[in-house]
Image (cartoon, rainbow, N blue to C red; front, side, top):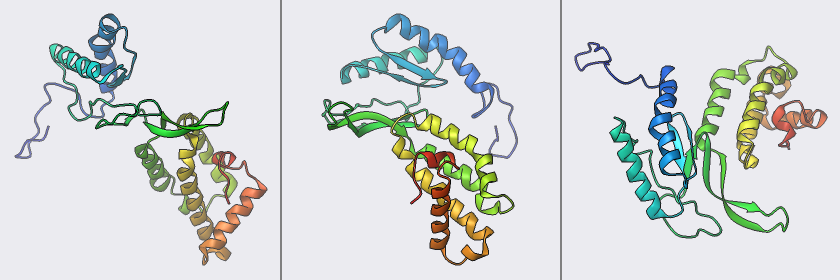
Length: 239
């Protein structure tokens, strides 16, 4: 810890934010503080937890308020505190739950859960459901990965095929995780990668340097000739 005068004070409690040991200790401690406590005292409430993030399902708003107070009390008894800003009661608004409450969405493990349109696979009827999709924060992190670490536009030393071979494993992993639900929300990421490839082409090929549209038209032709070259091209057309 850095003191006001610039000197360092040795840490005498807690774990560093982002430290490797932090999630390990969270799992060990919360297994008894929260998991076992929920299993014994609140069997009727489905719940899940990952490290120090978790969800508990309740049937009514009043039940959620009561359970939140009980969890808060349990944590304090064990020398812990629930995060006052991150901990909240969310109303899962959809086709059947139409009331108005302050919070109607939440983000968990890179997914944002909120009211979204869906289609009945049997009747084809469009309706509102409470569904997960990749969060804006996760999309931003992926774009930053592409821009700051991949630096596609600077890799003119590689061919397009070599770029695909190099980055397809990462793209495939993103699709397999974030594409489990509401896959169309990944379209913006696909478009972003396409534009980075356009920038790469304009740097690599002199004939495409001046006109951005010409470079994009070139990418469309490449896609039409080999629509499976990049992993995300299998899902989203370049047109």
